[in-house]
Length: 194
View (cartoon, rainbow, N blue to C red):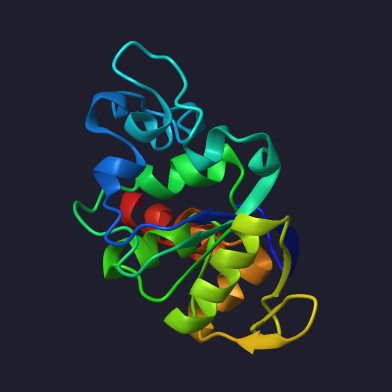
């Protein structure tokens, strides 16, 4: 997992609430066994019509948001099933952070375990940024160490559990955390074979 301390990026306004994981990555694309390659299917049913043609009106298909790496969304983002493919597809597409008033619990934890900062922010502030991002390019800076998001005029604090914050700062996923104890694991396995 890539470590992240600060991230500056263009905000993409997805002005929808209760975005569930089947909308983030539809079930027909879950056949891959690796974590990569899912970005092309992100929000597939919203990005493309039934013939596979791009829907120009969808935000990710608009040229102004092609370089976006921070997703602004409505409340309860990531609800529905617990599929870890949802954060995989967001990260593979290029998103490093999601700002929303609230997140579904399992998605929230899966996002952090996969290198995405989920930042819960007051709904009024999210809507303000959403309107700005819809009107003109909005660049936000997320400082994970200080737990603040900066726009051109202000700094907004966000909360994140200390455990997950440290893992994000150091690029430690569950496998990397386990491998920190590799010597003890090897010694235990060797003792069991004796």
